[in-house]
Amino acid sequence: MKIVIFVFGVWILPALCDVLSFKPEVSLSSGIQALRTATTVTLSKPICVFSSGTVVDVFGVQATVNSIPTEIGNSTIMTYQQTAGGATGPYRAASFGKPACTSSPFVVSTDPVTIQAEINQYLCRIGNDVQCLSQVDNPPESCNAPLTAGVRYRFKYAVRNSSTSGYIDETLWSDSITLKLASEPTAIAPTSRRTGGMVVITTILVILLFLLLCAFVALLTISFW
Image 1 (cartoon, rainbow, N blue to C red):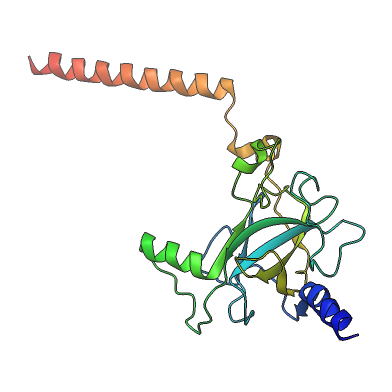
Image 2: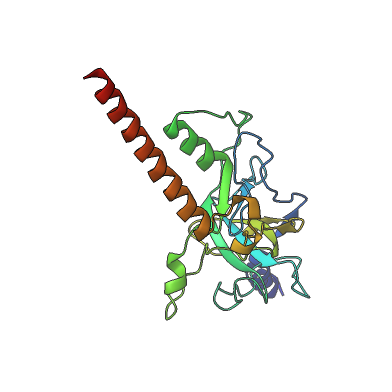
């Protein structure tokens, strides 16, 4: 009986994964532009959220999926290609080291080195890698491919140790985040367009102005002599 209990503990306990009451969200920093574009979204990293683990994985899924699993747990994880970019279920979008727990606020700077260091410490950008899309035959476990414009997404963090694939803790799914729509060329205001006729007229007027200026200079020269 003792042996059975021991085996049960060894095989079942690693599968347990706590869900923390934390939701990923778009950074609220007003000093950074383009936190949400047509193909990317920038999330705040889970600072002081996970007490253990070394690597944080980011999972994404389109909010229109009928049945989004509450927990990722240690179930089979599908790739970006297998889920059609999150259209049929969650996929692992990105990974980063568990951020250090700090109370230092995000400080906007004009120094490029400082800006990049602040971004790496506090922010995570989803949708800024197109290289994994070409790896069709052997797709990577994580694929941070561009997101789909105008589509609503939800994201989740899950922490694990770098030496294992089992997750220790994970967060709740974020609220729906809608990506922006790219402006169509036909949607440009008519007042900002330049037709071919307008270009021709402008060119003719410039030439006439040049000829008048030449004639004025010639008239002054003749009068002087």
